[in-house]
Image (cartoon, rainbow, N blue to C red; front, side, top):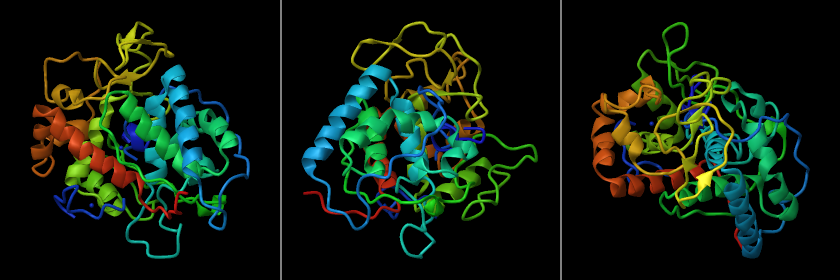
Length: 354
Protein backbone atom coordinates (compact mmCIF):
# COMPACT_ATOMS: atom_id res chain seq x y z
CA UNK A 1 0.00 0.00 0.00
CA UNK A 2 1.21 3.41 -0.18
CA UNK A 3 2.27 6.30 -2.00
CA UNK A 4 3.48 6.00 1.07
CA UNK A 5 2.94 1.94 0.91
CA UNK A 6 -0.33 -0.98 1.18
CA UNK A 7 -0.03 0.09 0.62
CA UNK A 8 3.22 -1.50 0.11
CA UNK A 9 1.34 -4.35 -1.38
CA UNK A 10 -1.01 -2.19 -3.24
CA UNK A 11 0.82 0.88 -3.87
CA UNK A 12 4.29 0.55 -2.91
CA UNK A 13 4.33 -3.22 -0.86
CA UNK A 14 -2.73 -2.72 0.07
CA UNK A 15 -16.39 -0.50 -0.83
CA UNK A 16 -20.46 -0.14 0.91
CA UNK A 17 -20.03 0.10 4.50
CA UNK A 18 -19.20 -2.94 6.63
CA UNK A 19 -19.71 -5.52 3.92
CA UNK A 20 -18.21 -8.90 4.79
CA UNK A 21 -16.29 -11.29 2.57
CA UNK A 22 -19.41 -13.38 2.14
CA UNK A 23 -21.81 -10.49 1.51
CA UNK A 24 -19.72 -8.39 -0.84
CA UNK A 25 -19.47 -8.82 -4.57
CA UNK A 26 -16.59 -11.20 -4.71
CA UNK A 27 -15.52 -10.30 -8.18
CA UNK A 28 -12.99 -8.47 -7.01
CA UNK A 29 -8.24 -5.42 -5.76
CA UNK A 30 -3.17 -2.45 -4.17
CA UNK A 31 -2.85 -2.55 -0.86
CA UNK A 32 -0.05 -0.03 -1.74
CA UNK A 33 0.67 -2.14 0.93
CA UNK A 34 2.40 -4.88 1.91
CA UNK A 35 5.87 -4.35 1.05
CA UNK A 36 8.01 -3.70 -1.65
CA UNK A 37 9.75 -6.88 -1.61
CA UNK A 38 12.79 -8.81 -2.23
CA UNK A 39 13.53 -8.74 -5.91
CA UNK A 40 15.83 -6.58 -7.94
CA UNK A 41 14.66 -3.41 -9.61
CA UNK A 42 16.22 -4.09 -12.96
CA UNK A 43 14.93 -2.01 -15.85
CA UNK A 44 11.71 -3.36 -17.28
CA UNK A 45 11.94 -5.18 -20.56
CA UNK A 46 8.79 -5.44 -22.62
CA UNK A 47 7.48 -9.02 -22.46
CA UNK A 48 7.57 -11.26 -25.49
CA UNK A 49 4.35 -11.33 -27.44
CA UNK A 50 3.70 -15.02 -26.92
CA UNK A 51 0.93 -17.01 -25.31
CA UNK A 52 -2.81 -16.86 -25.19
CA UNK A 53 -5.03 -14.04 -26.23
CA UNK A 54 -8.80 -13.91 -26.12
CA UNK A 55 -8.90 -15.89 -29.37
CA UNK A 56 -6.32 -18.58 -28.60
CA UNK A 57 -6.69 -22.14 -27.41
CA UNK A 58 -7.43 -22.79 -23.76
CA UNK A 59 -4.63 -23.59 -21.34
CA UNK A 60 -3.98 -27.17 -20.26
CA UNK A 61 -3.86 -28.29 -16.64
CA UNK A 62 -0.47 -29.88 -17.28
CA UNK A 63 0.93 -26.48 -18.23
CA UNK A 64 -0.51 -24.89 -15.10
CA UNK A 65 1.06 -27.66 -13.01
CA UNK A 66 4.40 -27.13 -14.69
CA UNK A 67 4.23 -23.38 -14.21
CA UNK A 68 3.41 -23.83 -10.53
CA UNK A 69 6.40 -26.11 -10.05
CA UNK A 70 8.71 -23.52 -11.62
CA UNK A 71 7.22 -20.73 -9.52
CA UNK A 72 7.69 -22.71 -6.33
CA UNK A 73 11.36 -23.25 -7.19
CA UNK A 74 11.86 -19.52 -7.78
CA UNK A 75 10.22 -18.66 -4.46
CA UNK A 76 12.31 -21.24 -2.64
CA UNK A 77 15.56 -20.04 -4.19
CA UNK A 78 15.02 -16.27 -4.12
CA UNK A 79 12.78 -15.83 -1.03
CA UNK A 80 10.83 -13.41 -3.19
CA UNK A 81 7.32 -14.31 -2.04
CA UNK A 82 6.44 -10.85 -0.73
CA UNK A 83 7.20 -9.09 -4.01
CA UNK A 84 5.11 -11.66 -5.91
CA UNK A 85 2.18 -10.90 -3.62
CA UNK A 86 2.64 -7.20 -4.24
CA UNK A 87 2.85 -7.72 -8.01
CA UNK A 88 -0.40 -9.67 -8.15
CA UNK A 89 -2.23 -7.29 -5.84
CA UNK A 90 -1.18 -4.24 -7.82
CA UNK A 91 -2.31 -5.90 -11.04
CA UNK A 92 -5.73 -6.77 -9.63
CA UNK A 93 -6.09 -3.64 -7.46
CA UNK A 94 -6.85 -1.38 -10.42
CA UNK A 95 -10.35 -2.84 -10.78
CA UNK A 96 -13.37 -0.53 -10.81
CA UNK A 97 -16.66 -2.37 -10.29
CA UNK A 98 -18.61 0.64 -11.55
CA UNK A 99 -17.13 0.54 -15.05
CA UNK A 100 -19.52 -1.47 -17.19
CA UNK A 101 -17.76 -1.08 -20.53
CA UNK A 102 -16.39 -4.03 -22.49
CA UNK A 103 -13.59 -6.10 -20.93
CA UNK A 104 -10.88 -5.19 -19.96
CA UNK A 105 -11.84 -1.53 -19.50
CA UNK A 106 -12.57 -1.97 -15.76
CA UNK A 107 -9.01 -3.18 -15.05
CA UNK A 108 -8.23 -5.94 -12.57
CA UNK A 109 -6.13 -9.12 -12.69
CA UNK A 110 -5.56 -9.01 -16.44
CA UNK A 111 -1.75 -8.93 -16.59
CA UNK A 112 -1.65 -5.31 -17.77
CA UNK A 113 0.90 -4.42 -15.10
CA UNK A 114 3.62 -5.86 -17.37
CA UNK A 115 3.16 -2.99 -19.81
CA UNK A 116 4.34 0.58 -19.75
CA UNK A 117 3.04 2.94 -18.55
CA UNK A 118 1.43 0.87 -15.78
CA UNK A 119 4.66 -0.80 -14.63
CA UNK A 120 6.14 2.69 -14.24
CA UNK A 121 3.36 4.04 -12.02
CA UNK A 122 4.77 5.33 -8.74
CA UNK A 123 2.96 2.70 -6.70
CA UNK A 124 4.59 -0.04 -8.79
CA UNK A 125 8.19 0.97 -8.11
CA UNK A 126 10.35 -2.15 -7.92
CA UNK A 127 7.84 -4.48 -9.56
CA UNK A 128 9.61 -4.68 -12.92
CA UNK A 129 12.08 -6.97 -11.20
CA UNK A 130 9.26 -9.27 -10.12
CA UNK A 131 7.97 -9.50 -13.69
CA UNK A 132 11.49 -10.35 -14.85
CA UNK A 133 11.79 -13.16 -12.29
CA UNK A 134 8.66 -14.76 -13.74
CA UNK A 135 9.54 -14.39 -17.43
CA UNK A 136 11.20 -17.86 -17.58
CA UNK A 137 7.86 -19.38 -16.53
CA UNK A 138 6.10 -17.63 -19.40
CA UNK A 139 8.81 -18.68 -21.83
CA UNK A 140 8.49 -22.35 -20.91
CA UNK A 141 4.70 -22.35 -20.67
CA UNK A 142 3.55 -19.74 -23.21
CA UNK A 143 -0.09 -20.84 -23.07
CA UNK A 144 -0.32 -19.85 -19.41
CA UNK A 145 -1.29 -16.18 -19.30
CA UNK A 146 0.75 -13.56 -17.49
CA UNK A 147 -2.34 -12.85 -15.40
CA UNK A 148 -2.45 -16.47 -14.23
CA UNK A 149 1.30 -16.55 -13.59
CA UNK A 150 1.19 -13.39 -11.46
CA UNK A 151 -1.78 -14.58 -9.39
CA UNK A 152 -0.39 -18.11 -9.05
CA UNK A 153 2.93 -16.73 -7.77
CA UNK A 154 1.09 -14.68 -5.16
CA UNK A 155 -1.07 -17.54 -3.88
CA UNK A 156 1.82 -19.98 -3.74
CA UNK A 157 3.95 -17.42 -1.90
CA UNK A 158 1.30 -17.10 0.80
CA UNK A 159 0.87 -20.86 1.16
CA UNK A 160 4.60 -21.65 1.17
CA UNK A 161 5.08 -19.09 3.96
CA UNK A 162 2.60 -20.94 6.16
CA UNK A 163 -0.54 -19.09 5.14
CA UNK A 164 -3.92 -20.57 4.23
CA UNK A 165 -4.63 -22.58 1.11
CA UNK A 166 -6.34 -20.36 -1.42
CA UNK A 167 -8.81 -22.00 -3.81
CA UNK A 168 -7.52 -20.37 -6.97
CA UNK A 169 -9.21 -20.34 -10.35
CA UNK A 170 -7.10 -20.26 -13.51
CA UNK A 171 -7.66 -19.62 -17.19
CA UNK A 172 -7.39 -15.80 -17.11
CA UNK A 173 -7.17 -13.99 -20.42
CA UNK A 174 -4.39 -11.40 -20.69
CA UNK A 175 -4.61 -7.77 -21.63
CA UNK A 176 -2.74 -7.55 -24.93
CA UNK A 177 -1.52 -3.96 -25.25
CA UNK A 178 -0.49 -0.89 -23.23
CA UNK A 179 -3.68 0.94 -24.15
CA UNK A 180 -5.53 -1.54 -21.91
CA UNK A 181 -3.67 -0.33 -18.80
CA UNK A 182 -5.63 1.41 -16.04
CA UNK A 183 -4.85 5.03 -15.14
CA UNK A 184 -2.51 5.77 -12.27
CA UNK A 185 -4.05 6.53 -8.88
CA UNK A 186 -6.27 3.55 -8.07
CA UNK A 187 -4.13 2.13 -5.25
CA UNK A 188 -4.18 3.05 -1.53
CA UNK A 189 -1.95 5.30 0.55
CA UNK A 190 -0.65 4.44 3.99
CA UNK A 191 0.13 8.01 5.00
CA UNK A 192 -1.28 11.41 4.09
CA UNK A 193 0.31 13.52 1.39
CA UNK A 194 1.70 17.05 1.82
CA UNK A 195 -1.80 18.53 1.84
CA UNK A 196 -2.91 16.31 4.70
CA UNK A 197 -5.11 14.13 2.50
CA UNK A 198 -4.90 10.46 1.58
CA UNK A 199 -5.33 9.34 -2.02
CA UNK A 200 -6.09 11.53 -4.99
CA UNK A 201 -8.37 12.20 -7.93
CA UNK A 202 -6.35 10.79 -10.82
CA UNK A 203 -7.67 7.20 -10.90
CA UNK A 204 -10.90 5.87 -12.31
CA UNK A 205 -12.67 7.36 -9.27
CA UNK A 206 -11.51 9.75 -6.57
CA UNK A 207 -9.96 8.10 -3.50
CA UNK A 208 -9.12 11.40 -1.81
CA UNK A 209 -10.11 11.86 1.82
CA UNK A 210 -8.79 13.46 4.99
CA UNK A 211 -9.70 10.25 6.82
CA UNK A 212 -7.47 7.25 6.20
CA UNK A 213 -10.38 4.93 6.98
CA UNK A 214 -12.57 6.48 4.32
CA UNK A 215 -9.70 6.67 1.85
CA UNK A 216 -9.25 2.90 2.24
CA UNK A 217 -12.98 2.40 1.83
CA UNK A 218 -13.05 4.48 -1.33
CA UNK A 219 -10.27 2.33 -2.77
CA UNK A 220 -11.69 -1.05 -1.79
CA UNK A 221 -15.38 -0.31 -2.19
CA UNK A 222 -14.52 0.75 -5.74
CA UNK A 223 -13.22 -2.79 -6.25
CA UNK A 224 -16.39 -4.31 -4.80
CA UNK A 225 -14.79 -5.23 -1.46
CA UNK A 226 -15.90 -4.36 2.07
CA UNK A 227 -14.57 -3.69 5.55
CA UNK A 228 -13.77 -7.30 6.36
CA UNK A 229 -11.72 -7.65 3.17
CA UNK A 230 -9.86 -4.43 3.92
CA UNK A 231 -8.81 -5.70 7.33
CA UNK A 232 -8.05 -9.25 6.21
CA UNK A 233 -5.92 -8.14 3.27
CA UNK A 234 -4.09 -5.66 5.50
CA UNK A 235 -3.00 -8.66 7.53
CA UNK A 236 -0.72 -9.68 4.67
CA UNK A 237 1.63 -7.01 5.96
CA UNK A 238 2.86 -9.77 8.22
CA UNK A 239 4.78 -10.91 5.13
CA UNK A 240 7.58 -8.77 3.76
CA UNK A 241 9.10 -5.31 4.06
CA UNK A 242 8.48 -1.70 3.04
CA UNK A 243 11.20 0.23 1.21
CA UNK A 244 11.56 4.00 1.17
CA UNK A 245 12.58 4.01 -2.50
CA UNK A 246 9.41 2.15 -3.47
CA UNK A 247 6.61 3.10 -1.11
CA UNK A 248 8.17 6.16 0.44
CA UNK A 249 8.09 4.46 3.82
CA UNK A 250 10.52 2.45 5.87
CA UNK A 251 14.11 2.70 7.04
CA UNK A 252 17.21 1.87 5.05
CA UNK A 253 17.42 -1.21 7.24
CA UNK A 254 16.51 -2.40 10.73
CA UNK A 255 17.80 -4.96 13.20
CA UNK A 256 15.33 -7.36 11.60
CA UNK A 257 16.49 -6.71 8.01
CA UNK A 258 20.23 -6.09 8.40
CA UNK A 259 21.27 -9.38 6.84
CA UNK A 260 21.08 -11.38 10.05
CA UNK A 261 19.29 -14.77 9.80
CA UNK A 262 15.55 -14.73 9.15
CA UNK A 263 13.58 -17.94 9.57
CA UNK A 264 11.20 -19.20 6.94
CA UNK A 265 8.10 -21.25 7.65
CA UNK A 266 9.96 -24.43 6.71
CA UNK A 267 12.57 -23.69 9.37
CA UNK A 268 15.35 -22.78 6.95
CA UNK A 269 17.35 -19.57 7.23
CA UNK A 270 16.48 -17.28 4.35
CA UNK A 271 19.07 -15.60 2.16
CA UNK A 272 17.98 -12.05 1.41
CA UNK A 273 19.26 -8.63 0.47
CA UNK A 274 19.42 -6.43 3.59
CA UNK A 275 17.16 -3.40 3.76
CA UNK A 276 13.68 -2.10 4.39
CA UNK A 277 11.36 -2.15 7.37
CA UNK A 278 9.06 -5.03 8.33
CA UNK A 279 5.78 -4.88 10.21
CA UNK A 280 6.66 -7.94 12.28
CA UNK A 281 9.84 -9.64 13.47
CA UNK A 282 9.44 -12.90 11.53
CA UNK A 283 8.59 -11.26 8.25
CA UNK A 284 8.92 -14.33 6.00
CA UNK A 285 6.26 -16.30 7.89
CA UNK A 286 2.58 -15.73 7.16
CA UNK A 287 0.46 -15.74 10.33
CA UNK A 288 -1.64 -13.29 12.35
CA UNK A 289 1.30 -11.55 14.05
CA UNK A 290 0.47 -8.30 12.25
CA UNK A 291 -2.71 -8.10 14.31
CA UNK A 292 -0.93 -8.89 17.58
CA UNK A 293 1.90 -6.42 16.86
CA UNK A 294 0.05 -3.30 15.67
CA UNK A 295 -1.96 -2.65 18.89
CA UNK A 296 0.90 -3.65 21.23
CA UNK A 297 2.69 -0.54 22.51
CA UNK A 298 5.57 -2.62 23.83
CA UNK A 299 6.77 -3.90 20.46
CA UNK A 300 10.11 -2.84 19.01
CA UNK A 301 10.04 0.71 17.65
CA UNK A 302 11.82 -0.39 14.45
CA UNK A 303 8.69 -2.25 13.36
CA UNK A 304 6.36 -0.33 11.06
CA UNK A 305 3.05 0.94 12.37
CA UNK A 306 1.57 3.22 9.75
CA UNK A 307 -1.53 5.36 9.97
CA UNK A 308 -3.32 2.82 7.75
CA UNK A 309 -2.30 0.06 10.19
CA UNK A 310 -3.36 1.79 13.39
CA UNK A 311 -6.76 2.78 12.03
CA UNK A 312 -7.77 -0.88 11.85
CA UNK A 313 -7.97 -0.90 15.64
CA UNK A 314 -9.61 2.55 15.85
CA UNK A 315 -12.34 2.71 13.22
CA UNK A 316 -15.69 1.30 14.39
CA UNK A 317 -16.15 -0.71 11.19
CA UNK A 318 -12.65 -2.17 11.03
CA UNK A 319 -12.00 -2.78 14.73
CA UNK A 320 -14.23 -5.85 15.27
CA UNK A 321 -12.44 -7.71 12.47
CA UNK A 322 -8.96 -6.62 13.59
CA UNK A 323 -9.66 -7.78 17.14
CA UNK A 324 -11.09 -11.09 15.92
CA UNK A 325 -8.00 -11.72 13.80
CA UNK A 326 -5.73 -10.80 16.71
CA UNK A 327 -7.39 -13.44 18.86
CA UNK A 328 -7.65 -16.19 16.25
CA UNK A 329 -5.24 -17.09 13.47
CA UNK A 330 -7.85 -19.51 12.16
CA UNK A 331 -10.44 -16.75 11.82
CA UNK A 332 -7.90 -14.57 10.04
CA UNK A 333 -6.91 -17.35 7.66
CA UNK A 334 -10.54 -18.09 6.80
CA UNK A 335 -11.29 -14.47 5.95
CA UNK A 336 -7.96 -13.88 4.26
CA UNK A 337 -8.28 -16.88 1.93
CA UNK A 338 -11.69 -15.68 0.75
CA UNK A 339 -10.54 -12.09 0.31
CA UNK A 340 -7.39 -13.10 -1.55
CA UNK A 341 -9.37 -15.30 -3.93
CA UNK A 342 -11.85 -12.51 -4.58
CA UNK A 343 -9.04 -10.03 -5.19
CA UNK A 344 -7.34 -12.41 -7.60
CA UNK A 345 -10.47 -12.67 -9.76
CA UNK A 346 -11.32 -8.99 -10.08
CA UNK A 347 -11.98 -7.98 -13.64
CA UNK A 348 -10.99 -11.38 -15.04
CA UNK A 349 -12.25 -13.04 -18.17
CA UNK A 350 -11.70 -16.79 -17.87
CA UNK A 351 -11.27 -19.52 -20.46
CA UNK A 352 -11.87 -23.15 -19.58
CA UNK A 353 -8.85 -25.17 -18.49
CA UNK A 354 -8.40 -28.43 -20.42
